[in-house]
Length: 266
Image (cartoon, rainbow, N blue to C red; front, top):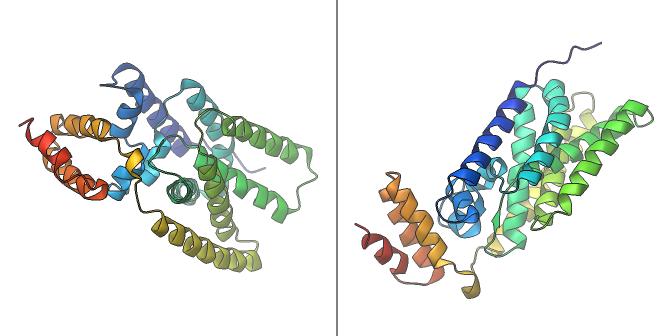
């Protein structure tokens, strides 16, 4: 029997999520949402202005303790399985590749929203696990079915929480299934099909992301943006904050509004 190793990467990810949750709960500077943006949440306007890392770092950020608990429980459950099955680096690529895919689906399908949570990555692991069960022929083993049902139920509970980005879950599921398929050494034919599917998925997603690269006038939140950028300046990121203000003014069509507000703080 293969020995189950301690899931170090999974534990580290969960620890980071918990620390960020503590910061949002006890040290928020304005609102929980604005603190989440400051700490790396998905926020379409800031992504368009150049903070592309938010497409991935949003996975570490949670606002609701219940959401964090569900995601943490699911991560320890299925993340441990993937970390032992694929090793740390492939596991992380599947997990955060799914987070990225989910964020891109969110970008392509929604307006100027703020999203948080590891759910897109967890849906990716779920999609990958379903594929593994289908390929291995172990669908009739009770322990495998039990694991699969438990994983699906947890993720469905997450899906019905208020404010959850369903399209991010769909994107994570599809990207996770493709990435997992690429790393299954016992299924060469499957890997070729997954590679083709992955290319098609990336092309289609990229097209819709390109088409959605706009912000509606009624979804411009200048006051929130100003408060977040002001806090960045206080943390010694003044040059970055000013650059972001200039980019956001261009995106919103609000000539020098944010820029002037930040300059007035000097």
